[in-house]
Image (cartoon, rainbow, N blue to C red; front, side, top):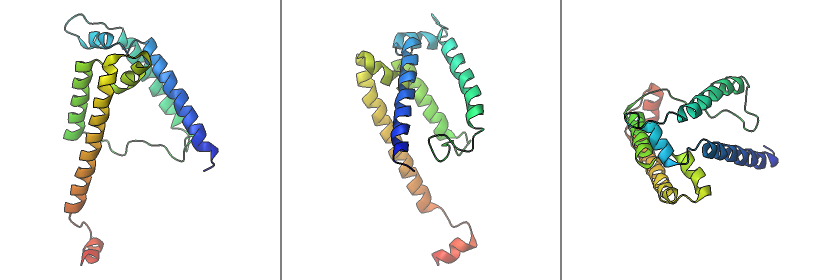
Length: 164
């Protein structure tokens, strides 16, 4: 890999993040009251964020199809796609925690970071909590992998031979 490639990756990432943040601000997703109004389907529901959601899903559906026609990405050696499609308790628990956190705070991680540009005090409290939660999840995931590796029985005759 050339030395210019990581610099270009960084610049493209910065540009994409900036466009994403500006889009979140324009869509008012950095306003927790707007988001909570969207989530309050039984009360004073504000459906305007459906346009944001619909635009994001439509654009993603179109662009994913186009991008994944390539053998490799433009600025990387391979695509970094999920390797599993299993829906298990860990996934459902994580999704529930994410949803509850979003509903309580009115922010998800992207808008929370974008709202720092507007010095929203809530985000200054929320982001350390998000980082702490992400760190805890990584630690628990590594611990789970270590335990699974340590207790995993041999699955083939080759592994049995190697262990003896």
